[in-house]
Image (cartoon, rainbow, N blue to C red; front, side, top):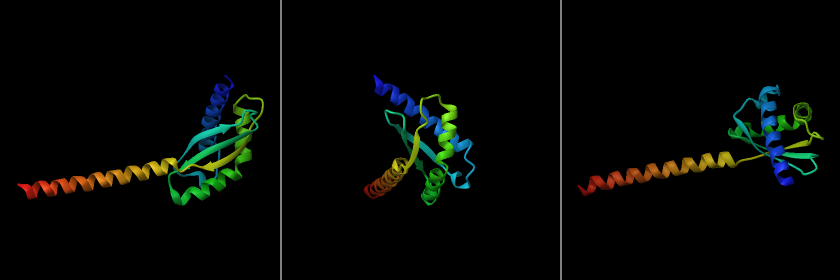
Length: 127
C-alpha cells in the first residue's frame, strides 16, 4: 500500500520538477530539448533522483551542470508547490534511453529502406 503512495509522490515530483525547469530556471544551458523521464523518491521523502533525458548530445553536459547548480532553487520551488512533509534533496542523472530509442529507430528505418531498395532491384532483374 505504501508503494502506491511513493509512486504517486514520485510522479508528482517528476511533473513539478519538469515544470520548474521549463518555466523558472533562467540558465541558458537549459534551453534545449529535454524531458524529465522519471523520479525516484525514497520512502522517507528525504532524497529524490531525477532522470533527465537530453536529446542533443552536445548540450547534455551543460544541461546537467546547470541542473546541479540550480538544484537548491528547484528544491525550494518544489517545496513551495507540493505539500509534503519534507522537500527532498535532488540529484540529477542523465538518462539516455530516449536518445538510444531514436538511434534504434533510425537504424531500423535505414535497414528497411535498404531492404526495400534491394527488393526493387531484384524485381527489375526478374522481369
